[in-house]
Image (tube, rainbow, N blue to C red):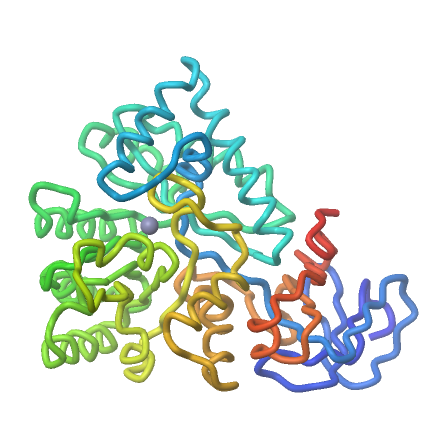
Length: 403
Ligand SMILES: [Zn+2]
């Protein structure tokens, strides 16, 4: 592979093998091997470094991000008021630009940290109608070549016409669902599945994000996924109520979820901040049953969720940082467990996002991160700032700085 564009020399490829050369041509991995000949310009020294496919942020809320910079965010009850007060300060007609400006800051952090794809929920609400959808459409173009951006659009009866026009125009990547925030959660689940059928779109739902011992929404989604033959095309985020039900019911739900082929996303940093607030000691952790899901063969990812908004004051758009937090919450500390956590922010979310050409194999997109650490375990523990980020075979960030 002498005429390739870039070569990474002697890197340790995550889940593939150590001391391998990776040749990149036309934005893809052209060849993986040992001692590959190279006469091009850009050769990166990968010795003692871990090469991973890009981080994948599969559940965040860009349109709400950074809306809590002027106010403290003490609890969930006050979150909505803080958000309303933030929106009231935006000048008329300025909402799309405001969403874009805040989203850009987070997306730049994501690129610098090594994310190659971000899937964001797109809120439709009376205050801004479809403005978030419009902002995302423009941002997708703006970030082409730096990361892939996908949206999860909410259906709202008041904007039914706009939703259907967007679906027909091919502008919707995933349909959202927030059944617990609607008057009739079961009817809401049925509605999003019928829309998924009608437009042939995958679903990404916030499910049972609460402490009460009630997993009715999750069970309904499992049933509907089987009924609509949507294995691999339905993702459930949160599923925190699964911690509150007894082991027998939880086990049954986990096994049925595996059978239905539903993806799970755990959001430990947001759940740990918000859930279990009314508990007296012992206070529950509020994180879904990740270990049981993984053992049952369910595809589980971890993601940031809210970033510096009224729901969570933290977040840097860095999946390696989220991996560290996830590992601590899950009490995962062995080499194998930390490799699994690394998959939960890379290859596993790539599956729920239905990303094409993702991975460390010949022919895959050259969306890569070279981390200054010898293994996934060391990378999660030491959080190296020294990272080289490639998107489409081009270096887009180095050591936290955008190119
Ligand atoms: Zn969320």
